[in-house]
Image 1: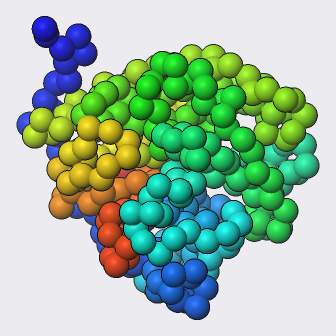
Image 2: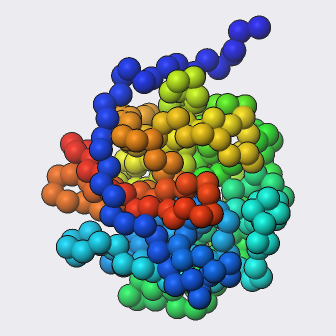
Length: 328
C-alpha cells in the first residue's frame, strides 16, 4: 500500500549555513548531581535580556548563562538552577526511563501571580512520567525570583495523544496572542505539527485559576520533507515578530520518540503568520540542534542554538547563525 503521507526529499533544494561555535555549556561540577562539568543534553533555549536559559532532557535543573552576543567574549561557565526535586540515576539507561524529559522552554508574558512574566519548561509527553511542566516566576530584571509551580500536563496532552500516538512536544513559544506547542515527527510518524492555543484562555489555567486546560484552537501540520530518506523533525521554535517564527529541526534516524539515532541533517527555517513554512536551510556539519532563540540585529536576526550530542560525556554547544531578509 502506498504511503498516504509521502515525505518529499529536500536535500537538493536547500542552501547551507555555516554555524559559528560560541563555546560549550560548562558548569561547576560541584553543582551537578552527577559531577559533570557541563550540560550534555540541551533541549530548549530562551533568551531573557542578557541571559540564556537552557533546559536539558536528562536534568532536574535549568542552566543559566550570560549571553555572549555583543560581549566580545566567549561563553562563560554557567550555573544550575534546580526546578524539580530529587536526583536521576547515574546509569544512562535507568535515567532515560524515569527522567521528566524537559524538552521545551519558553518565556511567558505577564499572568496572574507573575507580573513580570515567567519561564515555562514542559515535559515532552512521550511517556506518562514526562507530563510535568515547571513555571518559574521572573522578577522585574527577568531573573527567576525563587517561586515556582509544578503543573500536571496530562489533561493538556490527552487530546493530543489521541491524534499523535507517539506524542513528542519539543518546542513551545508565544506568538501573536497564541501559545504554540511543536510536535516532533520521526521515521515512525513523520508528521510535524504546530498546535495553537489562545493565550487568553491558556493563561488562567497556567495561573491555577482553572482546573482544566483549554482545547487547542488549531492543529497545523508542517511538511518539512526529509534528508537522505530520514524525515526532518521539529526540535524548538522562537518568535521573530509579526506572527513569524523560526524553528530548528533535525533528521534523526529513529522510528520513535524514545530511542536516539544518528543525526543525518540539521536545519533552521521560518513559518509565516499563515502557518506555512517560508524557508528552510541546512546547517553545515549536521549538529543536533534542539534549542533556538533569536535577537534582532538591524534588518536581520541572530539565532542562538544549543545542541544535544546524545552522550553524557560530551558537552552541549552554543552555536550562532545569522538569518537574513526576514521581515518583522
